[in-house]
Image (cartoon, rainbow, N blue to C red; front, side, top):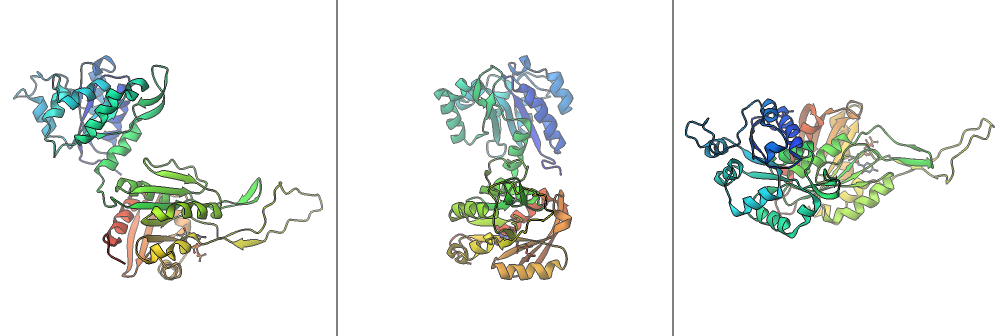
Length: 409
Ligand code: CTP
């Protein structure tokens, strides 16, 4: 999926050791279908050569405001007019200080100042030593940049090239890429708080054994990411899976169905949308041994008895807020056959406005899926595609169905 197809970026590099990450970012942007025009300050050229950036971007690099290659000798005008966004990565402390004053004594700062402010957003990825980042002057400048509608990305945390540890290093290239993709996503869920459950649950038999299922959590994590990109505050309650947490999403790890229920209960009062993708174990062992159950040599097998787990989705769907339309509940159904009939029946049984059906064996662990959306109006198919694409489509479908603020359902 070319997530930035056709997007034109000016990638500006100011001076900092994080310039090496800009090389990777340049490649990543091209891989997602974008074009990249690199502009470097003189300081940046001390850290990485224009040759590297030219080879990666497949375009000559610009560095000087006096560059005679442009017929009108105005690279600051020409290049900024052709861009969908200017991304300064790394943005040094000095470069940000220049931006807030509207200084324009090199091509990159000149271009930032000369850009059509409503048409060409400016996005900066700060990169500096932790003391420089924490300095009140820098924090003042960041606040001023935000007030000026500059999109300031977060900084990373951890080991720094100077040997110190703390906040201030530049985000990794893949993190910046995710933030840029999110930046361009339509903000269909602005103002919403989406609670997502994902993955399997694990029901312990004893301290070393348990029962679970093959859910990978991929669909739920993709939905959490798409909801965040659409502008929602997102909380993700995840069973035991090894998926990376989508950027900007608050993740709560749980194991059993009852842990998941407790986590959902803690967060659900703040939520306006619940998307229950988790494959919650329907039953758990009636008793859980404190110690590992040992073979005693008699050849007898232990007897397992089960009791039913709480139905988290049904519980939430019956809450007063859900019934009043203040919380929109979306359920999932993993079926093996007769998808429409089962999904429709499950929608009624769970009391949710939207039920998303999929074929279990064809989705668990896979990167793609096909969905059948069942609501009061009927059924809509989302044909087979990657879980990422389906998640974006599903978020648009959910946004379309949300009651307008203040209107009861
Ligand atoms: N769900 C839940 N809590 C449970 C069981 C299910 O929140 N204890 C949610 C799932 O996250 C999903 C939907 O309910 O959104 C699935 O419903 P469920 O009845 O569990 O589906 P199946 O297990 O597939 O049901 P059946 O055994 O009837 O096919």
